[in-house]
Image (cartoon, rainbow, N blue to C red; front, side, top):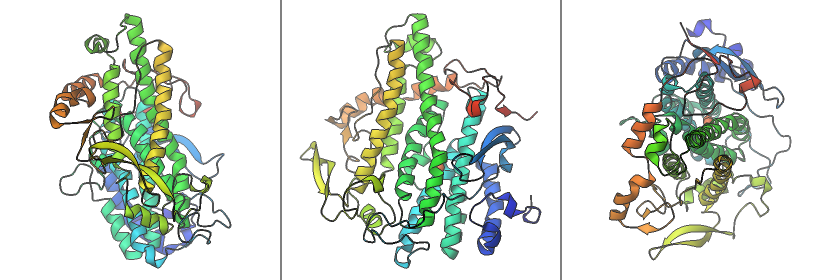
Length: 481
Ligand SMILES: [Fe+2]
Ligand SMILES: [Fe+2]
């Protein structure tokens, strides 16, 4: 495909009047071939020619923003869509609280804002890179379609951030847009910017945990950016959240179906003790203690994405009106946080205590608490699945100090139940808390591709309903001959 043969005004679905925005259109045109190269190199491996039943965002109308059809992924129409402008919208927090929102980048915030956009943008292609091998071991065509859907939408989220960079940040923005295509997840020289996005996604349970926990961090970040006083960013993020909801659905139901299959298999075989790992694994399903370990890993990696509990950076972006709190407009306070405090978990004289800190510097902590509450609601639903089958087991979120690399607990060993322990105890017990190589090998041994429509691998239950209300035996992916 060459630039000349592509009509970009129709190629890129958009509601930003791209046809008349010559400069941005030109910038996107010169970025597009590099993006396609990146997608072919780093997108789903071995499935570029497959026909995938995907939804494409074609407008922002809540009743009909998506269109479902078969498409080859490299031909996916990555669009630029911003949620509708809210007339009279005011900056909802910070020093400029109550002023009209900005349609352009305020000069003094330029660097700070660019960094926020680049960090968000960097996570989007990173997850596509992490998930590129999964198609080969998909437990069904339904699941295969789901990972591809998540992938193309993360690709679109990259476009969304690149549009902001190219439209509002001139030459710096174009350079950043180019670099977003150069970094690679897990690369020694040019890694992605955030830790969790350089980890491997070796199997489907990891993928489902990732979309549950790490995409949910993405949701929290997008929710806070959707509050931004810089209106184009707010509108972009608001629309991205519509798609993000499906990613978390994929994660929550993916883990839920895995749990369900395990419990059913145990019941059918009369295995009552969830801790009898060998017996459960012999049934060809993933034992619940291993699911708990995977959960511990992905939750703790995702907590690191919130940054330090106490952060002047977070205070600055809040004060500047660039990044707010979760559901800022629903919070009842002064939205400037001049004198408020917020309880922060800290290490005090060798013990974990809640300490009141200025709410302004505790913005990250607050967002992380909101995140934890959101995760817990998902766990409650998973535990209901276990309960209904009569198996005696309960999944729990580990303590926020467990297995951390960033923030207050990074130099302390904390057990999942929140006790400070020494190095020796950590080394002795971490195999009970985090997935071991053996656990990974076992899960890996179950990862075999199933491609008959309506069939599912033995370790995961079928979904209750199909995508776009399709019947159970619908052919979600037509593999290339
Ligand atoms: Fe995303
Ligand atoms: Fe996502």
